Length: 486
Image 1 (spheres, one colour):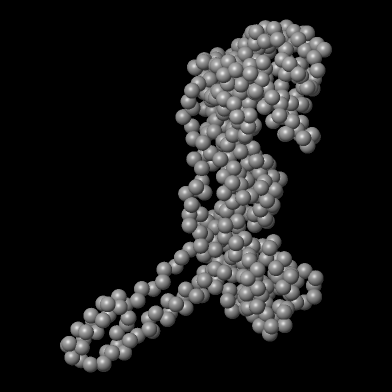
Image 2 (tube, rainbow, N blue to C red):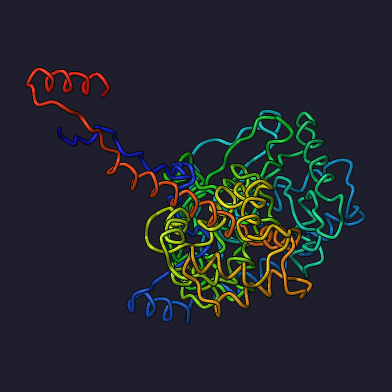
């Protein structure tokens, strides 16, 4: 007789999260920070030119403002601050000429490529990328169209009067109906059939470093009328030091040659929140448009996840979590189940988890695992005597045998789950804790999956077939039979 193993293939380990290409990192990681590094020669040049140019330009700008302000007062005299029913006429050429003189005194030389169409052909001008307050020069070049402006800008000394000349569509953050009213006003002007001048909008909604185009807000496109794109290029990277440089070239052109990302103004808000939580500000960047659309998350939900991430990452340099810090936060030792869960979070495989990976992991991995059935199964495993409550001994015994956790490490975790301090955990307390910490549910299902996989693998080598006979014909038949089975 002979012992021969069956030719069975071991099961393939199936991971819970396929790496979707659409959720990989963008071409530009942080479009909101301008990192300008000047050589010593450039710094010396700026200082020397600034000694002469800044005073000269300040004088010239003051002279232009002395003429422009009284003209703007005359133009806006007796005109309502809000609710204009018709456009003011006959003054735009004068103000446009004064605006050109103002920017010329600052050293701007504008090159326009392409042709601006009329208000009846394209009622809206969409300008991008928006990177500096100097972008206002586009409004001058375009013949002073209407703009969208915060109502607070009208109260700015001197310049508030200039803004009033544009009869802007006003936005108020204090008015709960402001967004609806703004959209209605843009729609009304866009569909006036050329009665109103064009409406100029920066659809990105915030400033970037010009390295890419971020997600456009919908306001410019809601009316459903033709929109003429206006693209800005500053060949001079020292535009922020404009008063100290001889001149700045600027193009309003047909193509930029930069990538597009799904960042938006909400990413700026998350950066600010990250800073408030003592994280590096760039830790808050997630490409909010893409994350919110694909994972069905609102800003408040992502902000809440940021607080949970900060609890783990405050002590980390750079706001990235290692597997050791991940284990410390969960109060568990590093084991195969925890390492696999960490690997599922770590989408780019660099050995750390950033906030973007954390949000994706919690939403795709952990929350779906936090079902009623999974929680009931987990609770029953802990509740060995089936009295519908988990004692400290039951709690530590299971974690000690499965994850190798010591009793000392479990004391604080048990007390945190035992919300009423009764000395035992009810299912409602167990469920409440799991909802606040969905990582544990996924860790539990990952552990069970690993146990099942290991059990199958261990069973395969012992699954042997006993066959009798030494006849060559018998052996040949057995071989043929095995091939058929295969």
